[in-house]
Amino acid sequence: MRRRPSILPLTALLLFGAVCASTFALSEVSSAAAQDAPLDDARVASVRQRLVGAADRAEAEGLPRAWIDAKVREGLAKRVPAARIAAAVEQLASRMHDAATVARNVPARGRTEVARAVLDALAVGAQLEPLTELVREVARRSDSTSVDVQHAVSAVAELGERGFEPGLATRSALEAWRNGGRGALRSLTALARTIPREQARARGAELTRAAESARSEQRGRSEQRGRSEQRGLSDDNGRGRPIDRGGPPRDDAFNQGSARGRGRALGRTGD
Image (cartoon, rainbow, N blue to C red; front, side):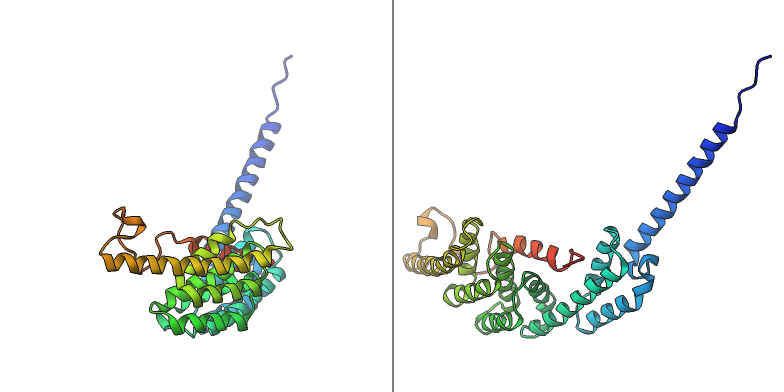
């Protein structure tokens, strides 16, 4: 007599599939909750009071609460323990306080952008006092205060990212600004990109020379532009391109450096 096949294995398989689907659905719900309101995620319930306190302090400083949310969200995505997430958030909140203090040296309209740039610079090791001196100097001599301050501080962040000693990076940015403004800062960072990381001992001297070159290049361009304007000609050797009479730079390399700095200031949970 032929035996009828048992349905038990099939039933077990179906039950296993249902359990897996349920687990996946719960995981998706948890992930969605972390994206929408990371401070309310169950995985950080034990430290929620610390996280909310940090977010409240950020808002009190006039800075976006979303910066705190982003830090928590990234920690959750990386499965970092709640206690470490809270420690990283509190460190970020402390830096945000310092950044907000420095940003008060510029008009209110641009303070958030300047504070973000200061966070980038602090994340690479720049010190608060030299950064404050840089911000005040640029603000004192700029016609476009917030934009120029953001560019100057972002230059420090980029130089620090490229392995230059943060104090030297800040001094070089300040010197370049004093001698040539925004154009000299662009030249400084462009020249710094050509210095190999392998030249560890000579990098400081190379950066100092880069600052001097940026100053000379900017002065040379200004003199050439002045002569061209007197003759009623365009710059770039008279090839028809209009004279640059100011305004934001066309090749904004500072945004690239700033983005990388934000990766450190806001995107790394254990920094």
